[in-house]
Structure formats: structure tokens, C-alpha cells
Amino acid sequence: MNLITLIHRLTSDPDCAVFPPTGQPQRESPLSAPEDVRAFYDLCGGVIIAQGSPYAVHIVG
Image (cartoon, rainbow, N blue to C red; front, side):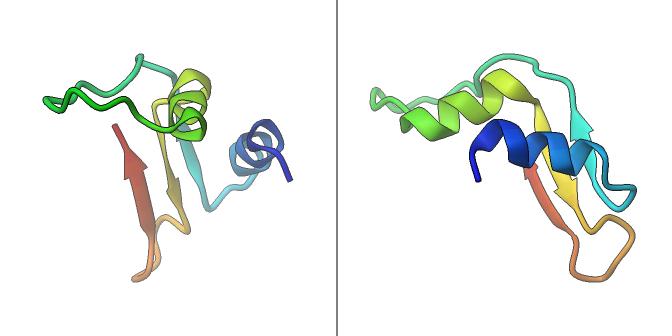
């Protein structure tokens, strides 16, 4: 499954929240983020998976 498909599925899942893109996270390191991480933040500003449950996962910038 590619990243675009995953974000689309999360968007349509009522137990998930997908935030609008806000740009790449700011880092103090001179190293660049991996390509898939940059692509994730180009598509969205973060996600919450299984929101409302005790094991919810937050991926935010």
C-alpha cells in the first residue's frame, strides 16, 4: 500500500483524524528527513489512529 492510499483510508475511517498539511516539521539537525517522511508531511499535517481508545497513536509534526 502506498502512502497516498494509506492517508486516503485514514481520512475515511471515523476512528482516525487526518490533519491538513502545514509544511515540513522544523528541525535543528542539518540532516534531512527521509523521503517517505517528507512525502507524509506533504500530504498531511499528522494523523491520529484509533482516536478515543486507550491505545491511540498520534503522528504529528
